[in-house]
Length: 380
Image (cartoon, rainbow, N blue to C red):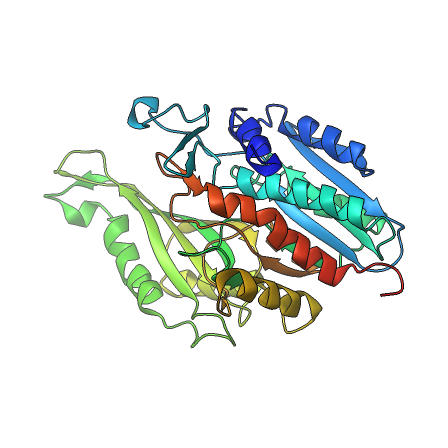
């Protein structure tokens, strides 16, 4: 059994449902310390984070970013095999976290071990940053670590996130940015009453619908460089007592915007607040900022990744800013260029989550090739 397969199986067997790390990072820290890495556990609240570094301290800092937590498995009887007992069937490894992202974390560790052994005098610093809070609230994970880094002046030049990003073939997509994510919880107040006497009531649904229709129909922009247009989706809409003869007193609506660098969260919040005020609604509006957009332009990181992925996939990768969010949104504001490269993402968060064993065993070589291009030996 290969090193990366064995380590991935060991990690899957730890039921690290967010934010419980279940010992994954201690296992990894032990291995990395044995390979010459300095390991610094950073625990905030109930969240474990690990910062492991190898190098002299001068030169560029390259970070491999990942998470050890997983989403809940759901009904265990729906799985063909226990989600926390890794099983290989027909060349495919099954288990919760197999794709998202214990395979990527294991490949990072094996690649880092190989790199440190083969290149003890490399330029710069190779670092691994792991958290157990990516799938949850993402408060005491990389977001908190990034604040800690700001306070102590920790520089990061390049960041490779091992999230599952490939579509059908390992290396067929290179994520070079992500949209920002902004969520809102809207409460509209009316006056409850009997539906037969509407003049004695104020229906918050009726009051809010024109504003929500305007919000939903708005064309926010036409895109930004390689980013798609900003979009808004209403995700929850609730009012009423359950009776069909009662005008509700309040309406609660949740919506989310995925936005490109044409916007900032400040501008979006101000723009939308003005819309609701213009409609004269008696309302409250609460915001949650998940992360600002980021984009990595042409440079050494993007060029190295493109070259390596083309060799592995047999064709140049698609370079995309699509998808949801990742913890790279907290690293990019530190001044780092960020990309995402990982295994096929078709089964993530699903029952019978899986990764092809052949892809898993190729991942360490893929990451090692990128590391070697970015942190060469002294004098090369």
